[in-house]
Length: 535
Image (cartoon, rainbow, N blue to C red; front, side):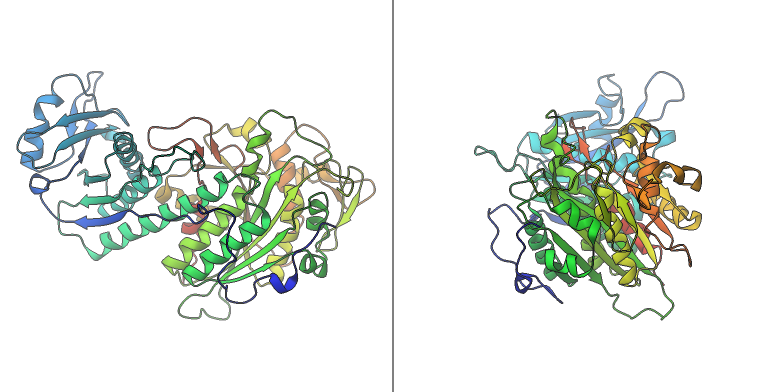
């Protein structure tokens, strides 16, 4: 077994301040000052004022229309809306320096696309476009005018504006010696009517969710030599202390004590000690005795070589993001701690490296999971499901009655769904509908895939209970889900969702509203799903 942390060095109960990290960049911190104001955009002396427009045409000829009732703003933009230079397609921009009648130094028009199909999700993207535009020009403050349209409810649109703007204020170049910090320092949203308490709460929710998403993206972006399992434990511990979560960080001694044989097998080839991280959120008012306890479980492989079944060299550098499932769950707990839903939530993260050396687990090995099931190892690069197997079982022993796990689990999910939808697998329709219903609020894209017993024969082993691959190249993401399903309670049924985010975790190219690199997918929806259980 690899060298382990002293259990005396592990953190138990409420988190204590973490030991100093190896670099100074390790804590995500958003320095943006946010304001939600009811003020005429004509009277605001802003460096950059942003207004949103939509194409209201019913034919092929664009008819860009500014979504505001403010007469001064309409007058300033009017000549350019009819010039043909700006069509209001989604993400399109048009800059007006020194706009007539406005105190703002610049007016930026941002397109939302066709008016008939506008939702808050387009607004989220357009707000991100505005921030990316400002960052490229070293503009540190911007003001967004609220887009007025019947299909844009004020609370949800206010939240979307905050989310889109803050998620856009992120880049991956942390380790460039010549890096220039282009972060936005001030973000203001102007409302056409006095902000209600509901709008104010939605604005705060958007900020919390976006900052939590960026917290996860910061973790995912870290190199494997910086974000080791031990370091992930430290950063999680520090976050928990900041937001009042109970936290435990254990290493190999606890993993062996719990008989987590599947998790322990994966750690064997690495000189870095593993980390078993447990977070707990207790609502301010204790829920009833029969209330659900949600269990969030994340795959935390901080670097994945594939082990003895080693991966090709091409793109192996990206395997630092094989802990994105863990980052999503940790960041969701960060958001839940601040939003304070009336539901008990716990989180289990199994973190280690998957490395090849003389002690590494091998194809043909048989390991025993914490649940007692035996697993024949067919491919050491199917390691994520092994650590999740023990994580799922452990979460149930801690009291979880409903489970959700996230993992960069299979390349096959990208073959099936591309890089647009992430995969969703479940054993329970009602729990799935809760999650899918949340997508209307969060704007994320998940597609339900099959996880029915018809596929179970594909993971049967000749010498053990199950094997860790599907035995063929067919239905690879489903057979991985079927493997996880083996570790979820059936009598009584424990409702469970598995999110395969392998193809949607990393953006190879930037989008107009978001940088390249880690996407931070699933955090908004996991958090919304958890809130749906509040009593």
